[in-house]
Every structure is written in C-alpha cells, then in structure tokens.
Image 1 (cartoon, rainbow, N blue to C red):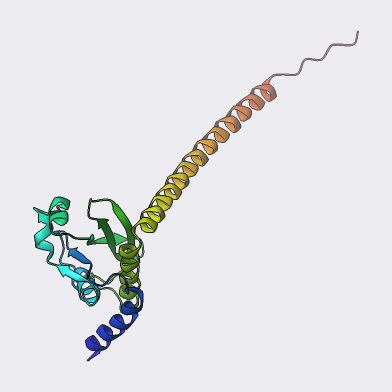
Image 2: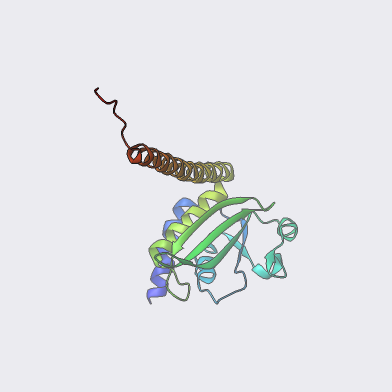
Length: 191
C-alpha cells in the first residue's frame, strides 16, 4: 500500500516537471559492488515518465559504455554507488550525457543497504529530470561547482602555506630574541 502511494506521489511530482522529457530514453546502471537498492528505487521513480532501457544493454564489463548508449539513442545514463560518508552511508548519483560527460554528480543520504528516503528520492529524480530537459544548464552548473571546489581547495592549500610561513617567521623571531637576550650586556665603565 505504502509503495503504491509513493509511486503515485512520485508520478504526480515528476509529471509536473517532466512535461518535455516524456519519451526520452535513459538507462539506470548499478556498478558492481555491494548490493544497493537505490538504482531500483530510482528506476522505479524515473520510468514513470521516461523510457528506461535495461542497464545491461549499455554496460561493457563493469562500466557504462557510451558508444552503446549512443547506439541505443539514450539521452542519459544514470549511475549510483554506495559510499561511506562522514555522517553515514551515502549514495553518489552521477548523470552522464550520451557522450559520457558528467551532467550532475551529487550525494544522497542512505541507510546501510543503500535505500534512500522517499523525499530524497523525489529530489534526486527531479534533479535528473531537470538535467535531461535542460542539459546545457546542467553542464554549466556542474562546471561552476567544479570551479568552486577547485578554488576552495586552492584557498585551503594557500591558507596552509601561509600558516606554515607564519610559524617559521615566529620561530625565527623567537630564536633571534633568545640570542639577543642571552648575550651579556656590556656597559662602559665610569672611570
């Protein structure tokens, strides 16, 4: 019963966002590794309004094959894998365009066996629909996020270098004052 309600809610929510995406072909692929329930959940949510191709048709070994995806006339390939995040297990969702470019990559909190809550599932499905409908915007957003991450990493590295330089300068000043302080003071005698 609850499963049917979730399907109905997903159908209604996604129906509003996927007016232009109807009939688009995608594949939801689960990479090898621990058994994860998320790809099944996501396929169930997305295949309400999109045409889903079995993930096995676009796989070569353990990786998505984008030549096969182009042959199948897919718009996107969606992959999900279970990660161990700082706050618990997470599912990393990656949406690739037909040529293999990453359109969106995000993480979603999950339980131990990779199951995602209904709210997070709807949010992920909505992001995927938006990326499929507006691929240029998704690619630009991904590029902006990548630039932001690079700038943040660079700032952290510079901050670390500056902190080390300050520590060295303090150490040098400390040594200099110790040397000066250890010299005996020589006063001219009054004779």
